[in-house]
Length: 200
Image (cartoon, rainbow, N blue to C red; front, side, top):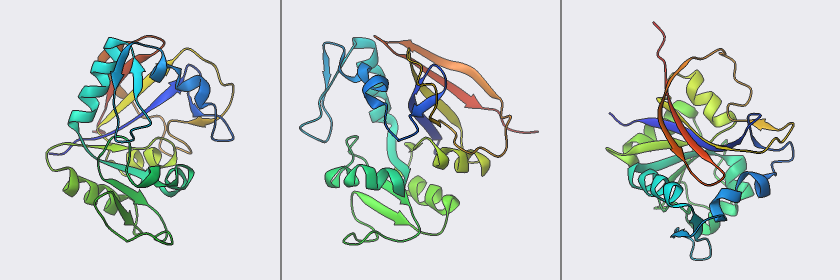
């Protein structure tokens, strides 16, 4: 069965962005603080991390078959210039297909009938690989629907003070997790993974 995970780089006080959807200069320092290069689908975006983080990223890329993101992130990144840096199809949860885009192509699928349908479509695309879910309100919707299997956190030593949590506006807290099921120490980041505990 296709696993559904969510993951994000997070500050020690629990935020994946500041209140203006920024703060990434602090959160994402680990993507450029090492010697090992990890290319992406964007030729202008080569990551340079520690060896441990590079191995973690390679493993993540190999096991991910599709992503699910919200319309806000899609718009903020301008659709990543037409292809996500992970080079996998992206299912975008939205109320309407953005102007100038097809409902479905090799890079993006726009789903307008809810999170359950988006996860279903992403699983069909991913096959036997994982579906990765964007943090924030999308992650909260997926865990509230009982569809999330694991939570992955790239924890960095910075305090943002305020911002957007990994599970924004979560309405079913508390949710218990098991683990950590993996811990990888990188340079300026600790990669953690937890399994969502099923009720009952």
